[in-house]
Length: 165
Image 1 (cartoon, rainbow, N blue to C red):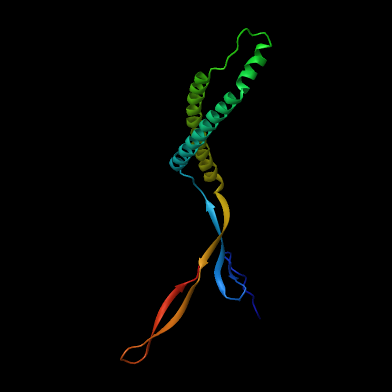
Image 2: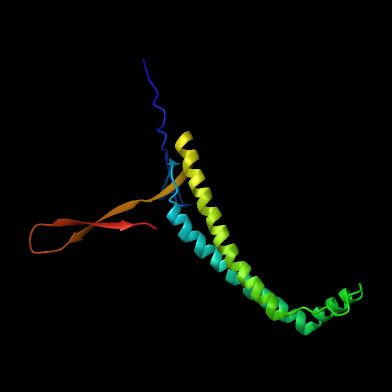
């Protein structure tokens, strides 16, 4: 009676180049994500949102300067005055200060939401056991090449390890 063995869950495949030489091995591995550290989420979130805030502020300042230089701000003010306002004026300094303060509140709020979502994720994975993720791991294959070392004694071989990358 002959039995067939099925490949293991972590399968190993060799990728070969045009010459038929094997370069890398690829192994499919299943991982389970069970916990996300809220402190790590906080650190990444605060940096991410602060950088996004700085980029947004620089973009708004540049757009404001372009709109002011092209006369778009004056055109919008004149258009709004045509609806019945006696004087309508955008004050760039006040707008910038208010957006600056609201942006900082947004950074804190968005980071807090990320941390809260990480805690909720941890509670849910506690109940269901985690999220299963399949990843492909590439392994570097070592090629062993013998080198003959000449010396006064009997011939010996020195094994040198070469890694293909």
